[in-house]
Amino acid sequence: MAAPMSWRRLVYSMYTPAIAGVFTRISDRLFRARDRRGGSSVLLLAPLLAETDPAPRRIARPTGSAGAQGTDGLYAQFRWMAEHVPAFRVPGTHIHILTSPDQFYQAMKARIKTAKRRVVMASLYLGTGQLEQELVDCMEEALQRSQDNSHAPDLKVSILLDYTRGSRGQVNSRTMLLPLLQRFTSQMRVSLYHTPDLRGLLRLLVPQRFNETIGVQHIKVYLFDDSIIISGANLSDSYFTNRQDRYVLLENCREVADFFSDLVEAVGDISLQLQPNDSITMLEGMVHPYKGNREDFSAVARKRIMEVVDTAHMRQRLLNQSEDSEDEGMSEGEEDTWVFPLVQMKPLGIQVDEQITQRLLTDAGPESTMFLTSGYFNLTRAYMRLVLGAGASYRILTASPEVNGFFGAKGLAGAIPAAYIHIARQFYNQVCRLGQQERVHLHEYHRSQWTFHAKGLWYYLQGQDRPCLTLIGSPNFGYRSVHRDLEAQIAIVTENEELQSQLQEEQEMLYQRSTEVSSSTFEQPDRHVQLWVKLVTPLIKNFF
Image (cartoon, rainbow, N blue to C red; front, side, top):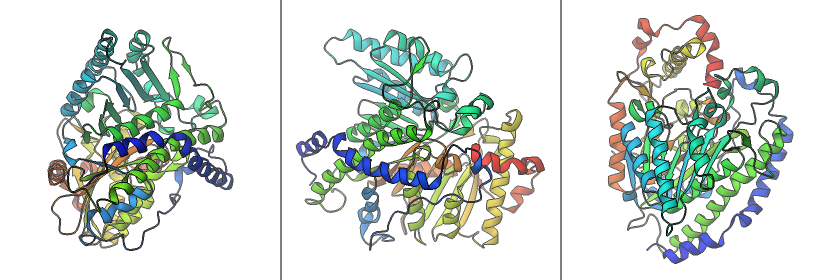
């Protein structure tokens, strides 16, 4: 039997950020010591041709818990994650897998219109077309309704975007949102994250079109009262029409929504604040991301963000321990699913997602299967070593050249699809050299007039025909996701058969539009990669 709701709320009300500050200060000291040993991170171009990825702190494997596939049960298999990140128990019936751009778009519009307390949206950018304007109109309608209803609390709207991408061009994300900010100043907040790595001479020299390659706010979270969509999709027309991504809707999951609302607020606090006159300011007491000291900014940002993570982590540990004392394992009733938020912000010294992902890849047993997908197949060397050295079977889905988002682009960007052909060929050749063709398979997604942007994984345990775990969110498993950008995703672990079936159908739907890569794939005329593209591929791997 789950703990009473009164106990759940008691834990939430008593465990404040002030208590979490103790844990945060300890973490800060550890990171500052590491930074002093490792030197300054201002030397931005050093990793360009790096041969290896710095190894993250390994998460210890509890005795008897790893590799327990089909023996100790699902809860015992993945409970180790709750030792490192917040663990939220939710009903599996409250989680819905969306499968199309239009479903994603319509779900957002409907929930913005009915939101009463909060709309929180984090994305790389907001587009400037008609579909994006309709989203803005929905926000305006909801804000106006809130003002007109004197008996309802004011609706608050908070938008977090990347500064470089959101400021590009004369008409941009900022100009789309300024009318709302001017009209509903007290109810509206627009935060623009600026990476601390784009500063000084580099900031002056890098063209506007490419300055986002240094690092961006890449989290994709769309929250409406107590419901939330976690995705890899941006707020742009192609993501609403013909750019395939992944999307999961968690309905009436207040604790998960509270966590991501707090996370977006924390990132917003360290970001530039858009003003009604289109100027930008920093909150009082915050370090400027590119004018202030680089190490000071990272320390303040890390403390603010980890305060949110540590507070939620301790709350959930207390809550889950009380529930476990009454009910071992997954709840027999409604709460049959766990949600684990995973955050990766390497420029700020936060690498939780990397640690959890590496542990998942390490623990996957010989009879299990991982379906892994990325719109830009560019595994870090650490992830690649784990995939090639693991016992699990892998089926990896990536974009074919014609559905790559950069297909047909001008200049250096136009070479990106060819560079990914080269990366895929190198990986396939390594699989063959190691004799792993029966265990590791590479697939390419095809769809006329569409592009492919899906990322994540589905984990099938030994003897199971449905996945019990998925990773879904913004990370791509590549160098940028791990080292340059701000990322967030969730791990969903479920015993709910209906949710497992939804995940299976989602995975099968994507893979049904794919073909398996073989040696003949790279002999096709359209797969020829010019020498200059091969030479710049290390650059592309680290920046795109």
